[in-house]
Length: 614
Image (cartoon, helix red, strand yellow):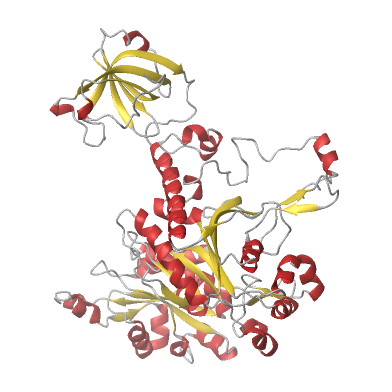
């Protein structure tokens, strides 16, 4: 028999009754039932109940073991009585009567519990992550991540893609975030950069004729951490294809992404097709380029109903500036739930003030209780109701009714309003839409709704530096090519760039690439770079484009966010092995740490004194 085990702790079944076996694992818990000891023994695969009676030679040792001790158990498999079968365990029909127990690794008093799933301070969990990872839910999440990555590799191989590994030490590149720089010992005063993404390398692979590339790629960005973004590093399913247009990318990758969700959705519905939503439409309807489409609320412009109205705040803004708009955030009550009244509207107004806004205008349509016996839902929703609130009073019944008609609102519903220049209030309007949908329980949380966001702006205005800059990816092809770059106003240009969004998260981003050298130079010139800048900073790509560059494009899907959604958690730390905390510290390994004088001297690096904080 093997030194440590003949079976795993999930393997034994009723067919094994009478067998003498050996198990090893962690003591999950110990229970004393009137002198009879029960030990739940756990390993990576599952759990088996061990029984130790006072007559067993193993009893004296069993009395000493505690939670999370590692032990070896020899014994005989016996069937449980019908009344003690545990249908929740695969091994629930049997138990192992211990004949011998060996302690392989005793454990000190635990700094955090492993049995059960109690909330515990995050810093303790991260410092003792090796214990935290023993907890059932987190352990399952990590295995789910492994399975998702394996499924990605399998599906990409099935459709003819080949996996390549690209360099980790590379050159700095303007990918939209800060680089991690690595000082060179061999070339004093010079630095490598860790790749923000394998963008240039995967394009060079297309120049090299490999046609269909993918990689589960590590990426490194010096960005502030948040719940849906790791500090420092993350992984993505990186993809590139030659001789393709945008639609080819969609047709190739949509089945892969949808298939991953269907495989691991635990029965939750997944979008059969991905909607195609232009960026401008997404911003106007949802206030964001990563909308949660489970929320049925769609915003609309209602400027005309306030122009020249008695509500002077909005009317004056509209009269003084033609760029001003008024947007409506309709709040339609769910089925026959309680009417949305003054109290809810006031709570939304207080929330808006807490977000730094002067307030949130509203109208609610009071229900006519004399008609509450109406039979069908269609009849119920067709009631016009009576517009209530300060805005309704100021603009009058006719305009209030027109707003209700435009938005399909009736008795028991409400509507909220924001006004100004859309570029100033769009983000807040999107937050308000989300808040209304969640507070009214309008969001269907038991499904995955995926969509493509397309037609992103090619450029944006950099207010800090007072210049035009790339809005998304500098290596993408502008729609209209060179002619558009030469004839159109830069901020009006759209790019062949696209995202996949799911339930309010961006989970993938990509584009058709700009493979023409002169178009590349022109695009960078508009953003303030010279031809020499392009040659110096992107020399490999620029040279490759001059030696027969195929049209190509691709995308990258965020492995971490996809797994987070599939596991139903709200923080990436619940699906990662050894994450940092919110202050970007690795509490387990003690990173970042100071370098020794010898290390700094070898690298030719001298630390500048840090100015004291004011």
